[in-house]
Amino acid sequence: MLCAMRLLVARVVGPVVAPGLALALLCGCGSAPERIDPTGIDSLTIPTPSPDPADFTVRIDNRWLPLAPGTTWTYEVTGSARASTATTTVTDQTSTIAGVRTVVVRHETLGRRGRVLETTDSYYAQDRDGNVWIFGTTGPDGWRAGEDGAEATLAMADGPRHGDGYAAEFVGGAITRAAEVRATNATTFTPYGEFDDVVEVEETGVEEGAEPYVSSYAEGVGLVEVDRAGAEGLELVDVQR
Image 1 (tube, rainbow, N blue to C red):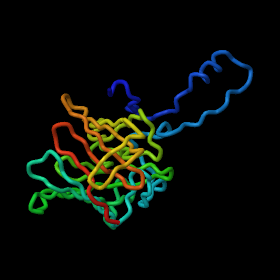
Image 2: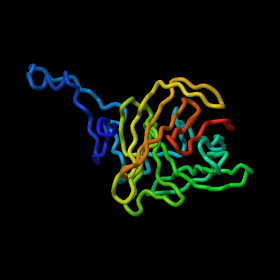
Image 3: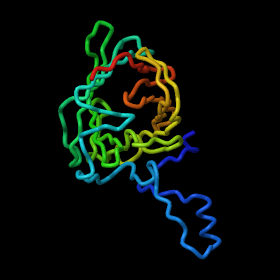
Image 4: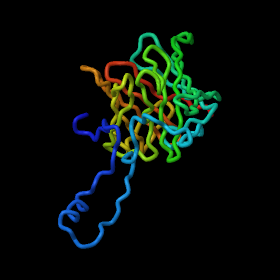
């Protein structure tokens, strides 16, 4: 599947020339062809090696990944013998990474008796076009853009398109996880409710034998489900704003 998708492994992604336009160029129609502007993620450099701080804001209002300070999502952890609940909270804290001011988002995993088993942070910023970028995470596999060959990568496009592929993680000077938009009109059922027109993003580590997982995002809500075959997953049970 990864070979078939439009995986943006190149450092710079250029616009794709439509077949009709290519034919017009070959035939030499005698008039200048109509300009076709890039759409979706075609004009983005993913990962981005030199982010311009002026291009980013900590106000993240992307339709599929809104990160307003004070919002907490609570998830039921599926497929786990230890963990019971996971929460994601947008804090009022910021952190400057690679020169860019980012929002600190805290993730906690709780055991069946409510004890916190793990706490990690992720760092996000939104560009002027509404695309959300991740600049790092903490934890055992943590990374920060601008350090040890790590670079900021796309977390959610302003307008996700079915089939879009890109680097989801870039660490040590190489892509370590790839993403593909698998659907933009899916239906997802969670304990919190039913969601239509859901965006599904499949991510896979590049190491041999890595199993893919699918994250589902609902408009105006954010992440509502993570499905991992034979491993821990998440299902949304509550949102507090």
